[in-house]
Image (cartoon, rainbow, N blue to C red):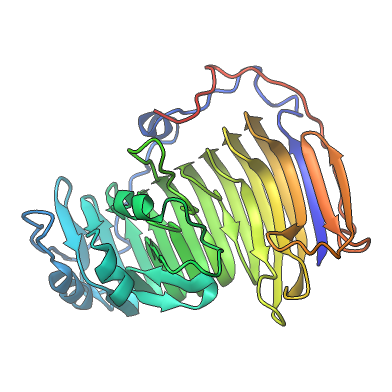
Length: 398
């Protein structure tokens, strides 16, 4: 695949960077550094409706929530889920009929952890055999507030332990926490996305996506069990994506647009324990064209992870084809990562018959299959040097 990338101002290569970097180590510190702005409905005169909360973890209010969404649709009202209340979702919800819906979430939406039920009844998508609790779609969808969406992931992680998501023999599927398809003008603001069983968000065939002031965590309570594959952001066939002020502590990619993504902008992310700001993977499926183009990512803190800036494309006779073009990584701060930049054009499926051209100069690694797959890349104003942090690194945020 053709790869065109610009690495701009890695680590602390600017005189504008302070001599000590203060990195928020907790949700409260993140909110202190980046306070939630005052968020109101677009229509101040809009009436609000609500539903009763769940009385206990087995009290499924899915039908009430679905009806409230229908009642609030078309701008009819604001659906408000108040603070200090929990709303249990125990069945799949098809929310792809939306047109001008606003939800203020200050409480908690929590999914049941009946793994067998969700595996049998959840929505499916063929890309990497994805499973979903619910699906959102339509036009002008806004979810905002100080509340949370809780995937109740611990049981899923326990039962998945020892397996691999890309293993073709794997049959243990785990739901994605927030899935949207055919959505135009969808925004999520201020919400805490917690403990997704698998990917945290997945946007498909959608455009004009905004994620702002988000907290995303997936933290296992069992030391030997990892919250695997809990990427903050994944996508398929999207355009015009904007991500601003996000704090992530998960077990996989921090930001990972996949096939056919264009016009993506990221500004201010903190990523702990992740696999990086990853373009891809793309090219997984034979005969399919995949591309990622026009991406700008800046002001990112990458800590205690595998990679920082990363591109990954598949290789081999069964891989697809395409390109990664015009990707800029700017102002990246790294602490305790294996590589500051990693470019891999033989991700996952490496044939022993393929020749590999590798350029490695720690902490940057470029691994290209063949001699003409990594072209026109520019290491523009790359200047790497150490910079003290205000506090020592910890393996996990507290």
